[in-house]
Image (cartoon, rainbow, N blue to C red; front, side):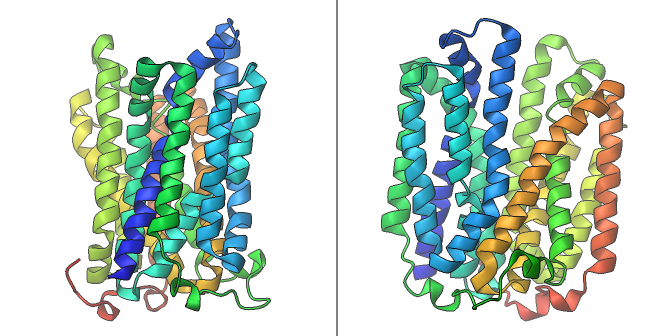
Length: 403
């Protein structure tokens, strides 16, 4: 079917783009060293600023680009973003000073936003009973891409050198651009997605039933999901793992989380057909809370693998259900703006989480898991009490067609 072809094109482009977005992360500190920065503290500072500025600006710009997509079409906005990335990443190969890298990463954040737009496109193109499947399919690619990107980037940098690696990254975006341009047919998709005149200010979006709650849930899920980064290796070491094996186990656990979350994205539609979005989101948050609390009672580091896998599935399922629920309450002509705001909430959680986690971890590593469990429990209670089942996708209204 035509909508499936469009879905595969959007998913492929998103996977390639998200992989390219994380391709340079492994060797960016080494690149600063090659640019003449010798002090370790300065290298860490420039690396942190350059890696952080892109999602920070993306968080600010996502609703703006979503609003333009509502007015002028999703495809051209995704093409605009990917086209700019081709040149920005190629320009990285010619920089001569650290601030050049920072400026280009800032420019990259300014023109980013295709992640939210590809989710919007998935929600637009799929039949109503397949919306969760389409959104979950795209989110699965967006989850796997960043997991593979650093590995591929490290291999590429070792094979061809640091500067040429940026041309390889630029080629990723070029391929993604070509996939969207020739693989995605927007004709017919936007017949129902024209923005009603005067209907979609950001204030009016926030007034939609449950939208603020959904933004809060997305922020909380992203906050918890990314809180493990600064403290998980330390926690593994505290459980008695040999220092030489800590990096390996930490990497395995992060990979388990990513893979399980991708599975959660994929099965979310099936779960929603059975019990509805509200119950899936609330139950997933509760299950994730139990898993995080279970970390506190793990007798050894290897016992973390089981709760980590269940945690990933729960986070992935809840995230897909939140976006699907949002697509059901936002008019189709305002989904670009709405998904842009949801992406902003997610990116703010991404930015704030490592800072809070690091500060808590400096006092007590276990305090991070305790706070995470409390946040997830709070989300489960809020969703179960504040969301009305009749306002969200439920099982009875969805056919049980096998996907």
